[in-house]
Image (cartoon, rainbow, N blue to C red; front, side, top):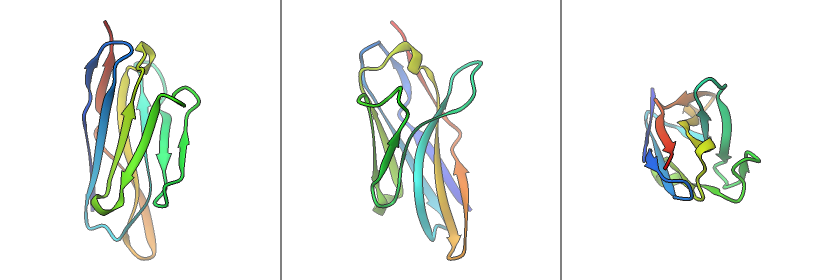
Length: 120
């Protein structure tokens, strides 16, 4: 099995910064894409950013220019640097890893989420 654990959430004032981390561990053969999603109260979960094993990235329009996703393949870890935070960024942030435990099959694994609150 694969475990995914996020860290780094918290309370920050508008305009501030936070860095989220997510580590995947377990019986991992290969991880392809990793990413971050978020879910605000009363709203559906939405994509924030993704990154492939080769480093190609994709961002939601709402975070482009403010958030940066990066990855350390050797550590099976993905990061989300969040700058110029806004109150509307408040949400539970979930990490996702598309991982294989064998050479011929892959599954999507999710973390438990970390709360990010942007408020003065």
